[in-house]
Image (cartoon, rainbow, N blue to C red; front, side, top):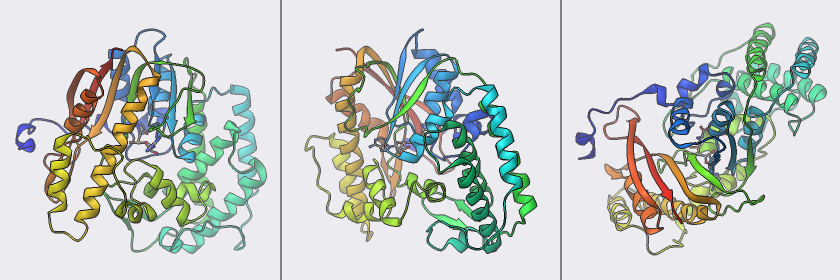
Length: 410
Ligand SMILES: C[S@@+](CC[C@H](N)C(=O)[O-])C[C@H]1O[C@@H](n2cnc3c(N)ncnc32)[C@H](O)[C@@H]1O
């Protein structure tokens, strides 16, 4: 039904993360669920007045914060993933040209100094040989060792973090992994690189990063650690506009794509930590997050009727995982309700909300995220609630992306 209604909607890659790779700092590291710079620019132009303070409670790669700072606005962002908080704060940092020149020199010296050895630390990634050819791995580990000696481990030094972000990009560009929809795949023959080639690649990545760090930002954005189901303003700031893209109920775990970076830069130490972090994440299904779902109980008995209806259909679909998927979808909206309820304490009167969300499909049953969120917003007394369809998400008919808009008038 939904597919037939929406046949004229285009795929619009300019409204996806792919568009961002051409935009300086936005292209540093890819996260598939990142949204497009263009979309955020358009929303800011539509909703923000001079001095509007922007909030993004699901920061991800800090697209909202960086676009806001580029356009001269101030923004506060929250995320639950420490790696993304670290990345986002460096992406939005105001760098000094002189210090960047010093960093460039240090980087060149460090790279000239790399000595190959089999004995350097490698991350405890399961089946690591599927990710990197043994010789490529040895080179990456040797480069990493040299970086740690010259720039310390990743921390609050934003200049040194630029080198670590370049290294994160290097490990993914030399890996054999491909990120598909829910699963991941590996090329059957992992590629063997040699040191000079990897050094050239690393230099090219670093040069791209340092060049874009030179662009001046006119606004300020910071990313704070916080659970969006329970946000309180640490500095009593209230916000005029919310621009965000929460997880979608589609079983894509951020940890799946971020894991290689997080292990290499030591934000993750073992598989249990990965599962534990994903359990904190709305919509997470990695490792223990999936087993925890089996025993999950709702916190709210008054969610929209259409949610209970679709959950019932998913549960009765006869697949061995249908009970689990039913809990997955139910928990997603239970969490989103908590988020939208607790968000109110951070909003100024007449604050505008923009939630970029996608629908999903389980065993042929559509979870109409946009409609369920509209109903939750209405239950929570938000006003001017609306849905704008943005684009088709893929060739599968009926999977779309929407901007769910509302305002808070209290
Ligand atoms: C779709 S991504 C946001 C992408 C972002 N718009 C960008 O352009 O990169 C959703 C983000 O929400 C974060 N997240 C999930 N659950 C959260 C929670 N309970 N509190 C705070 N952040 C959460 C995830 O870590 C992820 O970074």
